[in-house]
Length: 169
Image 1 (tube, rainbow, N blue to C red):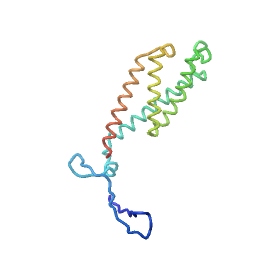
Image 2: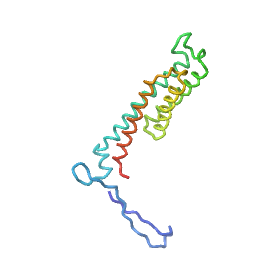
Image 3: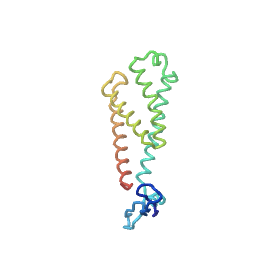
Image 4: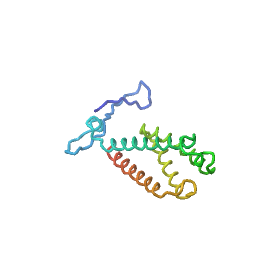
């Protein structure tokens, strides 16, 4: 799609107006034909972007469940007398409240596929790994949780990289 845009040297109406051609960045598709990003979006050739959005939505559901689980621990829906929020250590309480809030914020941002949602989610993943590795007394130091977080992080980076390659520079 080509548009003509009028440009003026000094933004004064009395000056000569120059016409500049602006077009969508064109690329070659799988068959060697030139195509634009607008056509790719209409025909569904942005498969990596679609996969990235689906991954972000799946991570949003997981973050929502984890955040609600933490809130259930805080409010007392989970755990009996021995597992009540009030009887836990101050470190456990602080970490649980932190993850209860940040997981739900990340879930909203991930579902909307916003850049800040991915940043908050990455902060959550790194925070969880740090708590599990550096402070094993808080949640027990489960290295499977850290491994799972690393796999999710790697999957996100691969999908984001491939989706970025679909878009023109």
